[in-house]
Image 1 (cartoon, rainbow, N blue to C red):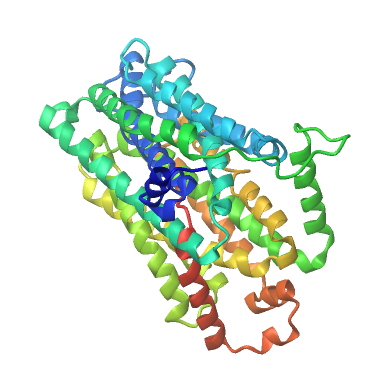
Image 2: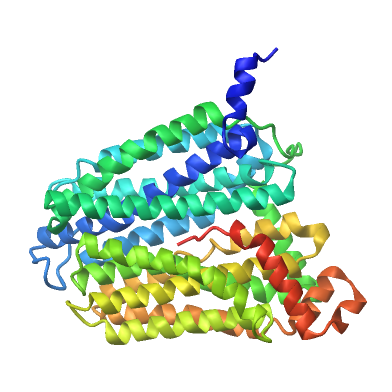
Length: 489
């Protein structure tokens, strides 16, 4: 029997005493900090250390090669490797989480490996930067992705109350934003006070130390105390294997989408997700390289740009909602507008960001990108919820996750190839525009939004709803679900 003291202690916890909800919140804080720390501070250090070893100064675009690559190609190559590994391994990781009882163990092991990687990065210097900064970060990036997938497997099971889950997810989302802003603000202040802000190596070390101190208790408490084991969600058939069952599911879903004409709109939607998600995911890697190598921005200045991106992404979720509430646009048209804005902003960035001393322009570009990210995610989540058949939502939502990962390696590969061929990095930055424009074309091919929704609901009367009523329904759906979106930057 549980003691009265234990009952009182549990009721003192937030989230109505739900330990797994508290664990998910703490894990989310650790995830965002462990992403921001290397993305902002370690990345700048890696580029500058690679330049020095190649015999260049940090204030020039280095054309020399080190380990077979130009210094400006290391981050994009890292993004390509992690993206390819994630795309290939997603069906396998999904199978382990669904068909075994090792979900908590996977979460704990990936958390420990990630902490080890962060600890090792504390010792980055001029002699070990390639092994500590590049190879270890590739491992950390892949493990971090696997850990995120594991955490999200717990999310829908935190409670059976749908309204409560929406509220909790909104709270998780705000905690992550607040934690990211506080961490960056703390680091910018710390580096200014210590005088490390002009030294990328010391900045990276300070960021890694802070990240390790903050995330260690959060991750260990979450995965040793708060998260609970899970039994297998589905049992493997006798002739099935964990190595192949995930790929078989993807193949069968692709077959269904191609063969049945009633899924035409969903096919074009998934193609849009593949290309636009790839572009938006690659913005951070490509642009951090560009800001460091071409604009010569310091770690502090890169941190301010990231703050602008995330802050305006939060505003973008509001813009996405209002775009169908205050206009006669349907969600497909609203999504098109958001992606056209992102494409135009990327093109403008390649045209006007030409050299040092343009920090204000870079911050403005980052802010507009943020609005596009938040707007797109809000509308995209609404569309997928409205156009997939209700009796197949689990299958298609799984494929939606797969579609969002399958091409994330391609933009960074294109950027790396152009850079290694001696073509200006501005062209590599501009190449992201093509992915956004391809996404806009795929949305055009989806056809009528009302018809796509009608096919999903199989409600013959749904086409008779006028545009104003449809906008009201969609706005209400966004208001209920917008905060459940995660920004995958």
